[in-house]
Length: 309
Image (cartoon, rainbow, N blue to C red):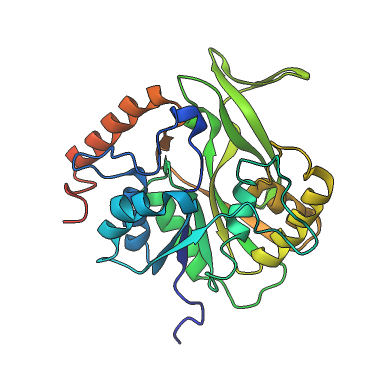
């Protein structure tokens, strides 16, 4: 019997402001031999893993450049939709303060796609490389989902922390607790993690340094969701706004929504192990390493060049 689950979609978060990248757009920065962006390789791997279409979350003011640098190259190969992450797109009863300038965060970006996605889907960052095996694992999980399961069966690809650190500055990671059944128990967003000789360290202004071994499982924002996530995140985003709307820098992160769903038994989250090597760009000095890594993957035969030839 044919599966009742439709092919999954890919949701790419590409609305970030690249504040630590010198103001240049990481999302459209060509790093492959023929000018490919990191998200080109993610879309290529997703297509090979059975994903049917891609939806990009972008900033409205970046639409023209994004269409020229990204959409034009992808449209011959799969359906592409754009969704704008709008500061004023809030749940009923809330309005954006005049002081708010930055986006509301990755959880809000996912919620912004609620009118564009009606099938199981995977969320990724535009400026991260996740690897072929990660998309294969996520695609297999999403294609196997029974319809209308309760609690909602979500998933996350987990990476060891040591494989996700930058040599050039702090990074933000979702620190995960995984139970013996392989389900996510909780996820804690740590926004200032630094590499150290013994592993890593989380440093915040208000707390003593927190040592980390580097073996911890972390989220790199590669999540598998069912459409139920939109109602769940909408409710949690409302709670976030009620407490934090006046803070100009507070953000509603995906892990906040996932953690709340797990605690309320609205969802489970399967952690999918991967042997893929992650890399990405947080700081400008990360770029040469990423360019060299892509060059090596092309030389090994993993990808052709040009990628979309």
